[in-house]
Length: 85
Image (cartoon, rainbow, N blue to C red; front, side):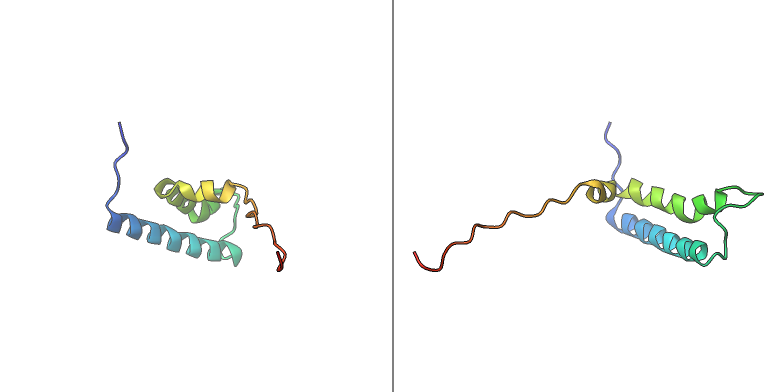
C-alpha cells in the first residue's frame, strides 16, 4: 500500500506552519522565556517547542534529513591544460 500524498497547497501550508512553530519555539527556548527542562514538566517544553515541529517537517519531507546527512564530496575539477599546445 502506498502512502497518500497530500495536496500541494495543504502540504505547503503545513510546512510553513511547522517552520513558524519551530522558529517561535526556538526563540522562546533561546531567550530562556521557557526553560528547556523543569521539575514539574521535565523535557516537555523542549519537545513541544522544538522536537514536535522537527518531527512534522521530517515527516512531510524526509529528504531534508537525507540531504543533511550525506557527506559532501568536492567536485572534480577538469585538468588544466597548458595555454600552448
